[in-house]
Length: 149
Image (tube, rainbow, N blue to C red; front, top):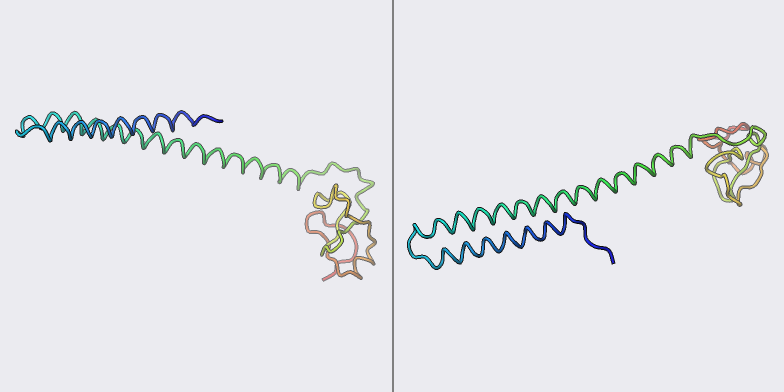
């Protein structure tokens, strides 16, 4: 079982202390008939209670922002990885000209294309066969051959 983050624990503690201070301030005011005796309870209980509640809200807000930034960092890492996968070329030149297509696909690719690399369903294909099937060339790897509209 994981423990909650420190900011959430502090926020909860500040909120409880703030509510307790407000309650004690109200309790003191309710027991005093004279206004002069009520003011110290309002100042000490009311202001300290409100300040503690503001601190609790700040703790909860910063924890929420931290979690959102962590998620954003993860998305940024995934986008960088995807960009590298789609733009890096690390396949030998001999495999460059071999054309492949996936069954049921709408385009054909170079064997080195990142969209079909490592897929067992990628089958070797000749340009005339691509024209027969009505396949279009991949926009990413730009394979040679017939350009079918």
